[in-house]
Each structure stands twice: as structure tokens, then as C-alpha cells.
Image (tube, rainbow, N blue to C red; front, side, top):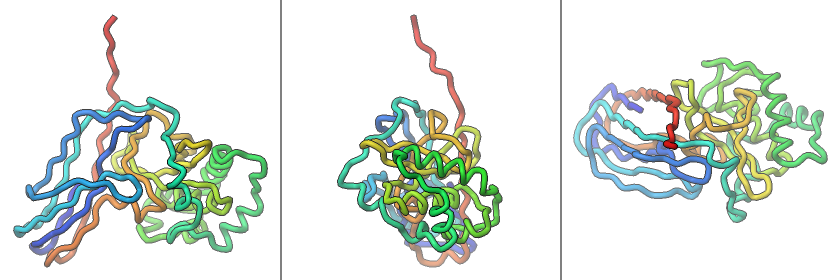
Length: 256
């Protein structure tokens, strides 16, 4: 990930969320984090359980680059453990997932009576995959679920926000997830739904469940909680951020 400035920036304080963590579903080995310019920093865990890196670049710079490398073993379990005390914040609408009249009308016309939370998520996922058109550039980082649904267009962030809006109308705990997927050159967003104490991944953009092709980085109520880079600085002028992701599938060899 790179952040470029049109004018020199100093006293650049940042918070990064772009580091996969090991859990029941994935094992991260050999993780390396390279920062340019080098600077003082520390790691912490936010209120959603995401690993964050905070620091400050004091000297003048026009480019801030973060490189993350490592190996991930995925598909170790069907889902992640959900803590009961965390579920309340994922049951109700957030800023980007508040349902308006159009999403509510769609929700009322497609009841999920008798379905488990996971079944409901898969049902809505299939409907969104059929109804929506993946259209880069049709929405922005500030587009809300209702706005994207009105156009029936968007990108992975919009698909995830709309699915969250529908599930939260049912008061089903569901969270926004940022991560990586094999075959994509950028970060990806999908949804995890809680069912029986386990988080299960559902990807409405691709109309499939999240499996061993996915690497989880962070989760939250919506995209705002999972921003990869937040910061403040002196100067800097205009900014341009770019994110490049390379995920390759390596065969695991075992000895006899």
C-alpha cells in the first residue's frame, strides 16, 4: 500500500489495519512488515479485535509505503469463534448499513421465516448476486447501502453493506470483513454472519461462501471500522492512495 502526497508531509501520524492474523481458520507464518520511511511505531488491538500498527513519520516525505509479506494456510476450520459479548454491536444498523425505504421494501418481499442465520445470509447473498451489477467507479467510499441498492450497481464494499442492511433488519449479527482473495489484485470485502457461536463467511459479490481462497484481515460494523489507513499530518497537499495485492496458491507438500 502506498500513500503519495503532492507536497511534503511531516509529523505524519497513522493507524494501519492491513495485517492478517492467525485464528482457527487461517495460520499466518513469516509475517514481515516493511515501512518506508522507517519510523517509530507500536502494535495494538482495536475494539473489534483487529491488529493495528500506529506510528509517526516525523521527517518530510512525499511517499509513505507499507509492504506486508507472509505465508497463509487457510481453510483450517469452517468458521471463526464468536464471542457472545461482541454480538450486540453487529445486530443493528451502522452509518453505512442503515436500510432506507427501498431496502426495506425488498426485505419485506423476501421473508426468511424459519431459516437459520447462515441460511438467511446465503438466501440474501444469492438474491443480491442476481439483482446487482458489479460496476467499478459507479460508487465511492462514502456510498451508503441504500444509495447503492437504488442503482443496483456497486463494488464489493456496496454488496457487503447491502447484505448487512438486510441481515440487521432481522437482528442477525453480521459483520463487515476486509481481506484478500486469490485471483484479485486489490483488497476485497465480504460479510461474516454469526450462527451458533461461529462466524461464517459469505461473499455476495461473487455469490459464494468464503472458503480457503480467502484471507481475513479485519472486521467491523461497516467499511469505516476496517479502513486500512487512517492518519493526520502537517502539509501533504493532495493525497493518492494505491493498494496492490498479490496472492498466489502454493501447494503444500508432505513427506511420507
